[in-house]
Length: 314
View 1 (cartoon, rainbow, N blue to C red):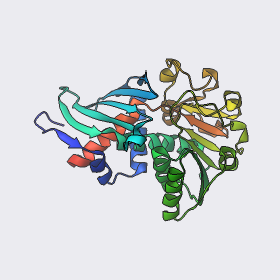
View 2 (view 1 turned 30 degrees about the horizontal axis):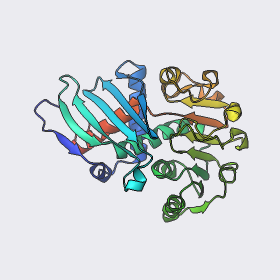
View 3 (view 1 turned 60 degrees about the vertical axis):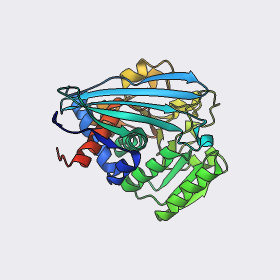
């Protein structure tokens, strides 16, 4: 990105129209993880503030040796759906690495959705049953849709089961699965949805007042769970049932004011998983990827989108 480039602005609709596939984002994240392991990408832990009224504000920052700096800020606003707005909103700034000059402003919603599912895909490539046919969703919002798209590309899915609070969202997700040729059903409770599923995705609202209602001891022995909601709905006493637990970043988790689970239960993080520091042949199921989101994921997805939009094949 040279210093003479005009400012690029990409809305969420513009980003979606680029046609970037979930597997492409997962590949970009894997490349970024290798770059981080080799010292070519520098990422700070995510910062978060709970300003009240259920809002959850988050920021990420990453700097790569490939010429980019990416900063993202998003806020989760639980009351937004009643206002006719998405619950998550924000923006991403992409700067020129050598000069710090602002080069692009991106909508944050599309990036946040696809990079979260792609982070899950990176872990699932190594920890889930490659013949997985059934996926259970606890929560039927944006992340359920993005994970459905990612997993349908990865696994020979046949069916989904959905448990969620909003009937309209549950039916929307089921309808989308049927359009993809899958069978889909709404479940009466979370246990019915998840206890015989090969894959489980939980994406409830980030509200620490929610009483845990999921138990890892319910899961089948071969299951893989993608936990996008900081483990809020999972009973702490059941987490030891996961034989392998990967987090997105050890340091970020260690420094968190609200740990997702006891630190000693963590097998490793994504960088260790992708760089080969963890012997995946020794990882056992049921396995979980519990994560908050990391700046590296936002960086990889944003740079991929900017390069696609500008025709930069690098």
